[in-house]
Image (cartoon, rainbow, N blue to C red; front, side):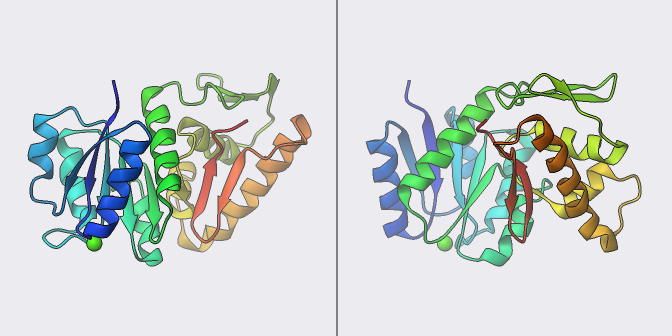
Length: 225
Ligand code: CA
């Protein structure tokens, strides 16, 4: 069955372009031009993913996402016209799975939708195809068959990234998750630890860098190995 995508976008030209791209690439699309009907739509139909514009006429997309999250864990990809919103969008408290900054190509959006659906389909076993395996009881991470020698902080950082491949974590969020007493002045330390982790991964497999830098935002684990 073709995945059902709910598109919530008030600019008709953009909504039409997205709908056309989705239908051409094997998805079913439902379009809403405001946030008002979204919760009802989700209750009525088994939607596989929501593409959600942040700048809607009746509600802020981020607030709407919080409402959606109260009863539904359907994946959400945000659309935003403002790059300064990205920090909040990737923050875990909103629960977005990805975002696109306008203008974007419809093909890129459908590629992201596929990636998020793939991830959602394999929830709980996200690290399976990345070459990593985490042994939480022994606090040990193995990469391509080699156990890594990690400090406590490095272990927690890498465990966080490996637990959700493709998800972009902000530096602030990584700090909250990996440090017992996070402190904003330690921002650079996230970069320093990532650098050390990368060196340790390179020692195992020199030809790839599985950690992706999102400039000015944070880091993600690559879904490709
Ligand atoms: Ca808009």
